[in-house]
Image: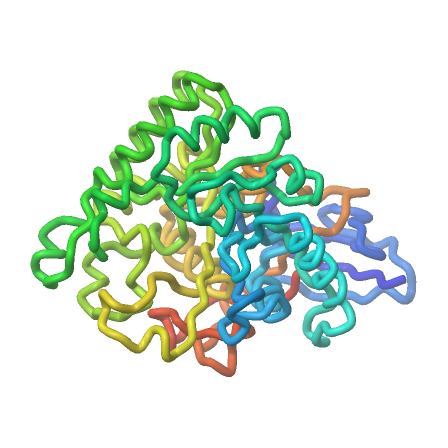
Length: 427
């Protein structure tokens, strides 16, 4: 049995609203004690001086993309899980837009079997890998036309239902909300009117005109959110709204929640850190979908995450090969990696600046995403499973291909030095 004593570590537990320096004793994957000082330990206990380090509940990612199956040159399940562990995540959920799409129980079973088989391939730096969950597709081949066998997918163990793509057929959305209600699984939507978005690649406004890029109006998102809210008001099925990116969307969601509608929402980590001015570089990893908002949008999203109007921060890790991203900005596929970068950058730009407390950031990355998935939340308390992230906010490292566990390197921070890195995860 392995026993570890983490001495004088800063414990951050959003459930108990704890942010204090303590000793933490962990034995055989379980938290044994949390106290100001722990001296009653066995002789074989490994003692670690953790002054200056942060120990938080394990991070939970609501949705990200895996290359496998179909695009293993972008990402394999193993590299995905190793990147997640290196980024502090103890639970991650992959979207169903793989090739083939995760739209049938057989593929869900195949992925689950593959996940269990990764245990013997774990590198020494990863004593354990995160728990990988699978979103089941709403429609066959995520094509937005014919519904999948939702009950069969639920029985196969999917974490919830989403296409991860916009659904234009509101009649289908209505039927889905009726069918999914008795299954007791989360259902997530990315609200976007593709006709209004057209061929846009950047948020509509002065910067889009200045940079000469096709614009995406705010209404492409807000009209789709308004339609979803109306359907929820009529049918009553709880939903999760993905990839919220505008200030007006925040207002709509806040109003719906104030009326008691069963809605949760998430934004992505990059929409909290960057706005349209960043696109001046034309770096193709800044081509995101939905696009980065303006400064008002970014500030509204930050405020909404702090207050809980937007429940969670998602990573939406989207790996692409070098060749796929070396194109003109508008032609490159949208998306960027983030599993290994999100916590250091969010801590550096939100916590160290004083805009967020450590607890506010941690709850948006840990217990609130778990609640959105209707899953149990982890706690740092005696007799609870050790699902933990140990983070050093002061260490510096350079974002380089050789320093990343993901197979892809499509990020605007490539080549830059970051402050803060995860030391270890307990899954």
